[in-house]
Every structure is written in structure tokens, then in C-alpha cells.
Image (cartoon, rainbow, N blue to C red; front, top):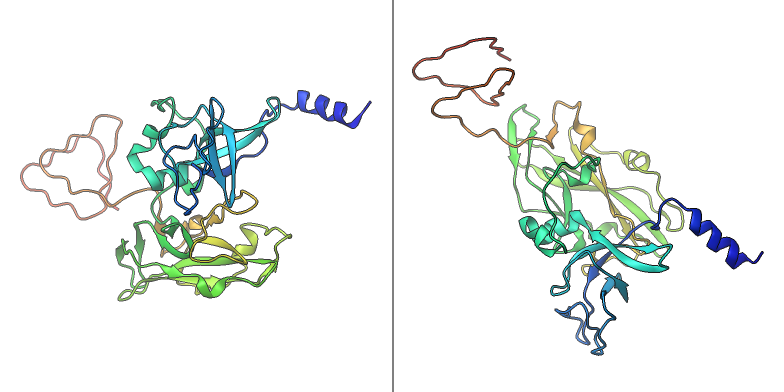
Length: 308
């Protein structure tokens, strides 16, 4: 039996019909390097076949099968994957994290058909949690920012991080044929909180990092609040988008390290809003106030009141 037939039989019995997905952006570039607004047309005016669009994977442009995103808008962050049975690359959906940054509440607008509500039973990746998540400024890996979050400073006071100031990774770009991890954290100084970046040791770019273990080997001050780690590659510059050659994510989340720390990042909750007027708590329900409660008027308790 030929190798080709063996491969065909193997593909026939593989349970997962898609190979691992890769990150891409819809739309080709014109001769000047600008994104063409119609993702079904390339720089030479060639129209993609029916149900195909052009996407960019790093510096490569290719036409892929698509029935997941709209064809009248470009620069949509998507995931593409090779379909073993169809033997072609296909758009399998939007790249939720990147698309959320790009479109926000309009994310469902770029999907085709439009994503509807319902109960999602999938496990939520840590990168889907907003508060404290690190991200690149204007799609360059060399300036990292963090989304707003609550934290406790070194004096024990609860603070809001809502600064637009980032931290530069320019000095951490590794030498040729290597890549490196850069650990990003918040210095929770009471007077001058700031994001800090600490680089690890570069290694051969053919040798993958063991994450998050190798990220934790990067020593930072014990008072710092870990937010995440960024993998930099040789050649990264101010134009580098975060879609790497191998299709993997450049970011690894480290916010879970603050869970047992007195100086922690609150990645699940936002600051409680003040409660005014009448507050009725139904039977079997509970309420939590994150700040002192001032009661004016009557205060009736039927059940338990716990004061922390």
C-alpha cells in the first residue's frame, strides 16, 4: 500500500476534522501596504472563488474557504485551520481575544451568521478575562499595556490601575535565531505605580519554552504583581503584530499567581457601585458590599447579617 493511501486512511479515521488553528487577519494588502477593504479581492484585482476570502498570516497572503465571517469588511482577526477531509484551509471563527480588542461590542456584527446568545458550557481561557490582561499597544509587541483592574498597593490600600502608560520591551528583543520571555508585572508603589518588564534568558528559537514554568524562573521583586509574560523573537520591531510564525499566542497569563497574595489583582470583579435607595435581597440570595455601608432610615434584617 502506498504512503499516499496510508495517509488518506489515517485522515479518514481521525476524530478531529481540523488541524490546530492559526491566527490570521482578513483582507489582502495593496501595493502600498494598505489593507484592501474588500477581502475577496487581492492586490492584483483577482477575485477569490465563491465562498473564499483572502487572509494574511504574518507576511503571507492566501485564499481560504469562509462561511464564518462577513465578506464586506477587512482586518477581522480570525482563526484558520486545515480541514483534513476537504483538504483546504478554512476560517473556523473569529479570534475572540483580538477581535474583542478590535470591535468590542460590535464583535457579533462581523460574524456570519450573527452569533446569538445562549448558554456557553466551554471552559473560559484566562486570556478572556479582561481586568489586568496585558496587551500590545497599536498592534506592536514592543509596548505593553494592561487593562484596568483593582489591586492592593504596598501600604495595603485598594487602588485602581487605569493608566494608559505602557512598558517598553524594545531593549529585550533577542539576537538572531533566538527567542526570549519577558515577564510583565505591576510595581504597586503607593505613590508611583508602574508596569515593569523583566527579561529572562534567550534560547534557540527551535526549542519551545515550558510555560508557565520557565516564566516563573524569571525573578521579580516580591512586592510586584505578576500579570503575564510575552515571548519575543529576533526581528520583532515597532511593526510586529502578535501573530507569530508558528501561529501560537505570544502571551501567557500569570494573573493566577496573585490569587494568594495580599497584593492581588482582582480579575473577576470590578469595583462595586454605591447602593442607594431601597435594597431588597430575595430569599436564598446574598449581597456583598466592598466598601462601608451608611444606613439612613430603617434597616430591617430577616435572616443573617455577616460583617467581615
